[in-house]
Each structure stands twice: as C-alpha cells, then as structure tokens.
Length: 174
Length: 160
Image (cartoon, rainbow over all chains, first blue to last red; front, top):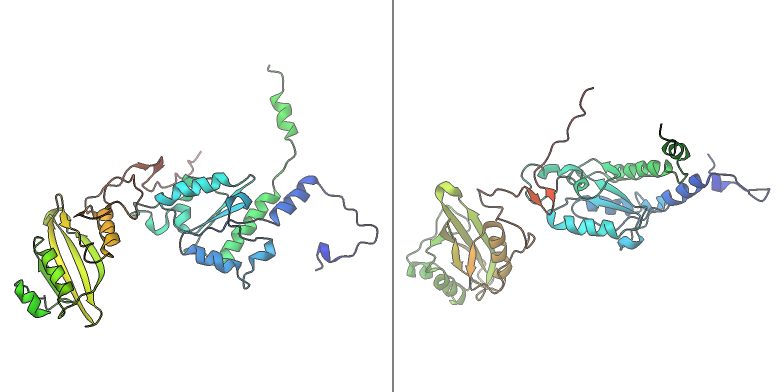
C-alpha cells in the first residue's frame, strides 16, 4: 500500500485536516525519549535503538537532557535513592510529557516486591505513568508495542475546548 | 604461610576453600600486617571484606577478609567473630587502601563500625536511611520520603 507521502500531488497539494489530527500526528511522530537506564531493561531499551529494531523509524532519537525530551522510558528497578532523582528529572521535562514504565520492576517492584527494602514498588508511586510494558525484561518488540500504545493515546488527545461540558457548567443553577 | 599462622597458634580449616583461619579481634591487625609484610606470605591484595550477621540466636557477627598474594598465587580468608551488640573492629585501610569502600559497605548494610576508618559513612544507601538492612532483625521503614515502602496489592474493583 502506498503511503500518504509516496503520492504526487497534481493540484498544489492542499489538504484539509483537523488541527488536532495534524498536531497529534506531528507530536507522536517525533517522540524524543530521555536517555535513561536503571537496570537490565536499559539493555533492551538500547537494543530497541539499534538498527535491528530501529527506534528511529518512529522519529525517536534519545536525548541526553530532560529539557528536550517528550517521553521518559523508566527502564529498570527504581530504588528509593533513585526515586528522588527520577521525580526531579520528570519535573524538568517540558509538557506535554509522557512516561512509559518498562518492565516488572518499574511496574510494581517485580522480583523485589516482597524483600526489596530498597525498591519503590512501582514507579507510579512517584510519577504518573501512561503506558506499562510488562516483561522481565520486555523484549524490544514489547517496548515498541508500548510506544505504539502511547501513539494511540496521543492520537486520541484533543485541544478542542470541551464546549458541551462548559455549557453544562454554565447552566443557571436551578 | 603456615609458619606465620603457627606463630599465632592458628591452623587453616581444611574443609574450606580458600583456607580459612579464625582470629580474635585483638590479634587481627597484628596478623594481617604480618601476612602482608612477611616476604614468605606477601598477601599484597585484599580481594574482599565481607560482613555476615549470624542472627539474634547466635548473637554474633562476622567480618571476613579475603586475602590474595599475587606473586605466590595463594588465597587466605581471615575470619573475625564480633558480638552482635555494638560490633566494632579496627579498620585495615592503612594496610590496603581498597578496604575503605568495602568497610563502608559492611557499615552501611550491617552496621559494623570500623575504628580509625578515614571516612565511615554509607556507601550504597542514601545518607538519611534508617537502619542497616542486611541485619536479620531489620524492619524496613513504613515510608521513605513520603513513599510507602511495603508492597500494596492493588484493590480489586468492588462488585456493584
């Protein structure tokens, strides 16, 4: 199947689209993840960036600073010592920002859930998480699956004012 | 090596590998200095310093020094047994510089205090951590920096 960009436009190529769709498409096609690895999941995250799995095809280039990143992939065990740093890094990212929790450890504590005195039992206890990727560690395919889930989520976002809700809220009190 | 050990009336446990000797904490520095300086033994490398908590029943702790002699290709482990209340032992940093971090780790996780250590503070855990987690009777904190430490199972959705 030919993609949209494979076509030639004869008549000046004017398109009609919704602002939401255009902006969402632009944003989800250039999600910059933060270079950020906490444990063995980071190795799978690195594999995802290699030519075999080619994270670049989603427009994802790892950034070395939270200021330029859109998505934080928490890949690995979140220790209490690291938790404060993760929170700080998350706060340094500019909005809109997303978090993918990669692997069992960062989802819920993983193998450390019972005796891990030093492990935060889920990164969602410190920062909000958009997508959870299960696995120990998840294969790169699974992480890509998580990224596509995040694409779906972004695709559904809207900058349109919720007119109906506003109408409801402005209803005269009876 | 055996000649030096006999001087201290020690004989290595035959069942253990590497050969292991148990020494009183008063004689530790003397013995380790001799093992390091004596040209017949020349244990110039300290591979590891390990701490063990034997639990409240045995009421002891142990520190094990794993020595290795690079020229002689020889290993030796030296064990010291300490009381569980207020475990304290002389630091060996002045003999092997590498002991500094190993002793900090034993202090961090087990609370063994090393006298005359140049910089005895926590190495792995955050500085404001409470307790020494590898002790058998360690109870973790309920909250650390506002985060609940123990695992909480997610509540199943209630049936309506």
